[in-house]
Length: 445
Image (cartoon, rainbow, N blue to C red; front, side, top):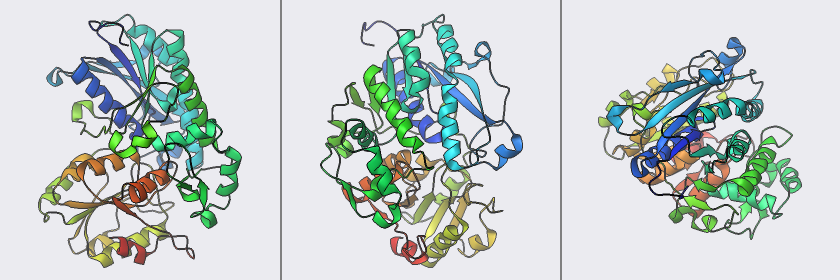
């Protein structure tokens, strides 16, 4: 991409259609447009489930916009850049139809495999963009959409840059798996007894990584270890064929991991945490800015922000333990309570009785402008699922964390937060109940 300084670059950006993956890619694109005069075409992939009734009850139902007709390649919807923003960021839209998921594991597998089916449409979009001014010159796509984009970049002789939207440490552990540092069979063996072996050392001496315990490994949904095999395939193809990696991280927090040779060049471009204004919004849920007014009325450094991201869910029993521990602490709180936060219950809003018991110390929203919340002077702590975006946003704002990881990479993130950076505490489950009990919640707060 450095063939000539006077050439105007035009990048097609293809995210994995998942909130935690869309945001960092858009932030990277804004930076390229603002600092390097890139023209960006950002592809919005809208998810729709084939059966509306099933979609309404699925974990993804509350994340995605209302259904729209599927777009054929020549019917891609385009939005021109907003002149007021002075950035040449254009939007294109495709629809992806998926079968209704039967479980969280099935939803993830369906999403990853479904995106691959968009390759013909993405190819036609690339060909169309080659005829525009300026013509397309490169492809920037999420590591997890490698199967849908790398072969297109090769075919059209376009350099592809792969964005790593998670911690580099979790990707590095996949790199070591590919290089023989440990085997998938070893992972499968300890995963069967994960609850019993949590504190056992799994592997030490892996270049760029701290000693890994069983509890630090990616917790896998399903028996086929799809996430491990899928990620390894995407990483191997990217290492062999991509122009470069860019990772949403920075030297001060992952310096050792970033030094490891991954074959393709690697550039740390984080932290990508800038607020996304309405014109460049990628939020799949409607943000409630009213919570900022409530925060304005609270004392400085007095409020605990609670959010488990756009996907994580908890049992009703776990929710009750969290609430009782929180109320017992008499801590002011702002809680993001998504309609699908609690598994298999009728609650679509935070129970009014429980909210009333907070005696005005609590405020609940269905979705919050998280970067703005964490920037507010009244916030002094963050109870989080340890998604990578949330982790970087909290670090950037100097907010300590209470860690309650849910799945996949979040256990590695929690390890980094608690043991390596020492900017948070980890909630521990009771061996008897398998839940984080109310006493543990109150202690951590």
